[in-house]
Image 1 (tube, rainbow, N blue to C red):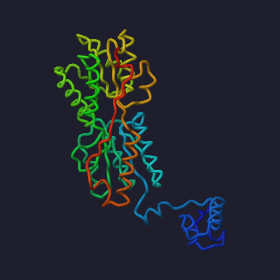
Image 2: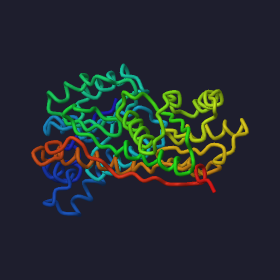
Image 3: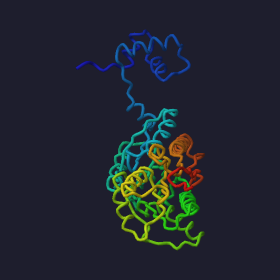
Image 4: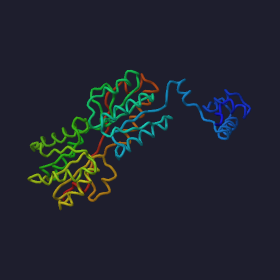
Amino acid sequence: MEKEITIYDIAKDVGVSPTTVSRALNNHPAVHEKTKKKIFDAVMKMGYQSNIFAANLRTKRTNNIGVIVPRLNSSFQSSVLAGMENAANQAGLNLIISQSLESIKKEKANANTMFNSRVDGLLVSLAGDTENIDHYAPFLKKGIPIIFYDRIAEDSGCPGIVIDNTQAAQKVTEHLIEQGCKRIVHVLGNIKINVYADRLKGYKYALMDNDIPFDQSLIIHSDLNEEAGEEIVQKIMKMNPLPDGLFVSNDACAASCIRHLKIEDIRIPDDMAVVGFNNDVISRLVEPNITTVNYPAYEMGELAMKNLIKHLENPKEGMLEKTNKITLRSELIIRDSSKRK
């Protein structure tokens, strides 16, 4: 087994002091550029690896940020993570990403792993069945900042970043009503999650404002994945009279519903107007293109990371001390799936 290369070996090879090598590796301005180049050439030649663990012990920072998402196979979460990574890279931070697979049990295990890995901060979008967030108490006790995004913990004392889901859903439902829809099916996830509870409120508000009575039989709870489309359409086809509008809380599921509605000879949007949510790529690829809500996922991820970084750099000035919620703007994008002539 080869001997591990140290800064003393580098110093001896280049003919400088170990202190100069250490400063050069940390890009200290006191070290001349020619000397830096000699040192970095020696580092590459000799295969030196910096001892990050030892450095972390000195600074009491790991430069790692934990991220817990419900599912990685989501266009929305992919965009959020891209925004987070962009901000993290600029700050020299690393992301440790895990998925709860919509399970509180897995979320708890992930949180425990993040805590034991000594992450400097945590960004979380809650699992579908998470009602209690006691598993994040150790972070708060240690002063490790947590920011929830999209699926947030209400009244947790931790900040959250969201869109106004109530307003967005109200706009969707009002749009369908303007297209002549009277019986609008709303497909959503677990209403114990703030996202879906708020969208249901918006749906109800729009019905109320237009003197359309709320009908519980038109509410379908679903996993909102691609596979769920067939089951949702089967339920819709058993309704009498047949609905004339469909509001699905996810573009991939909305696309799957459109596919199965076409199999049933339902014309979109003439027989049934359809709206999705998130403005995923698939909404622009299927025929007809899907009316949807543009959810600023990348901006949400970037904002969450920037605020976490700001807090880490100066806890007294960070957003975590000032507010419990940031609400981003969303936008209804009207396309052919709901636009009646």
